[in-house]
Amino acid sequence: MNDRPKLQTLRSVCVFCGSSNGTEPAFQAAADGLGPALKAIGVEWVVYGGGSTGLMGRVADSALAAGLKVYGVQPDFLDARERSHKRLTELEVVPSMHLRKQKMSERADAFLTLPGGIGTLEELCEIFTWAQLGLHRKPVGLLNLLGYYDPLLEYFDRMVTYGFQAQQYRDIVVAAPDLPTLLGRMQTYQGPEPYLNLTPSQV
Ligand code: AMP
Image (cartoon, rainbow, N blue to C red; front, side, top):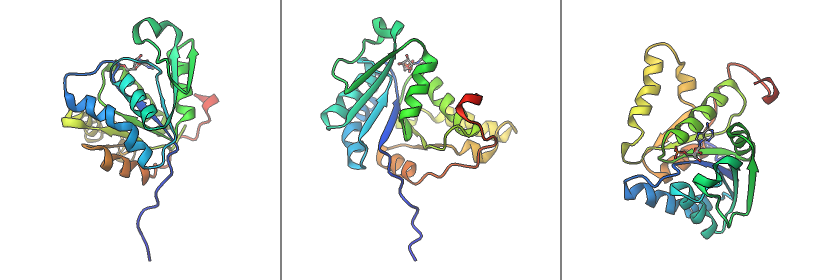
């Protein structure tokens, strides 16, 4: 009997990451290498915030160079700062951050977070809470390069220790220090039973 976990096909992966490059060459190298790594597991679309700066721009460039299609969603008021990428397969301009996240989440089969700042953290945390609420059961992966996210993962664990989070929901976020391991875990992810069964209109 083959009891290896079944691999999910992730056709569309939403990437959250910094609009800056960060200090570490390893962060930039991970963004530059993401396109081929996603292509290798059968991903067809990368979904992201639509900007051309920092790791975000690098992710889009690497995906396009690998022959993937890229869908970006950018709030109109952010264009001056994050400058929309000019070569995307599809760029949608929306009036709010909320709509941006909703559109990104609708188009994705999975969410992948690379190093980033407070915007990246906000996106990760919101999609984490949406999984707990039962709005989606898609994998939420965190690339913990150089231990950058160790304090955050420790904080997630402390929520469990201190009785504010159930372990089964804490485990929604899967983390790994390298991309192949992380993508493998995301492909075999099975979400917990949501503690509520909401439809998006009930949020
Ligand atoms: P940062 O990690 O701060 O460089 O931001 C990464 C991306 O997250 C940028 O495209 C920000 O515009 C975006 N961002 C920041 N706050 C939010 C939010 N509340 N909702 C959606 N995206 C956000």
